[in-house]
Amino acid sequence: MTWDIVAGIVLLAGFIITIVKTIIPLTNALTRLTERIDSLAEQVDEMEGKKSEAHRRLWSHNDMQDAMLQNHEQRLHDLDGKWYEP
Image 1: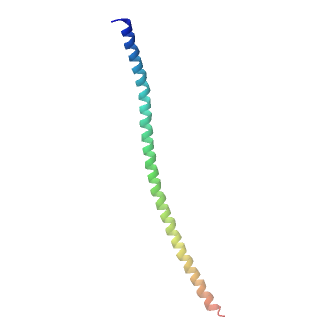
Image 2 (image 1 turned 120 degrees about the vertical axis):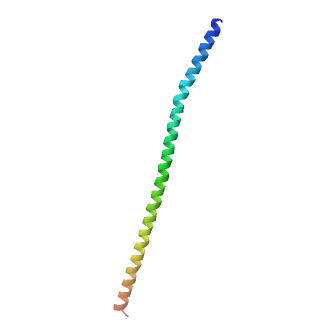
Image 3 (image 1 turned 60 degrees about the horizontal axis):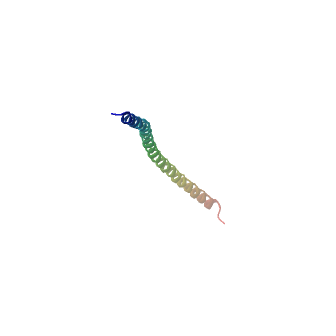
């Protein structure tokens, strides 16, 4: 073996080590990012469920208040009709 072949093998090994050292942290970072995105997606889905429930409760309360207001207006109308007859 000549020194050129040894130098080529050492150079190739160094290149491979450099590439692997770069790829491993990038792969770890991508894995962590994927886990965080999945977690964030779960939180958004949970928040949408809570939001839907909150909207349902608000509209239910609004309907109840509409019924109470209609009842109040009807009672006022009945009272005005009894006392005021032109």
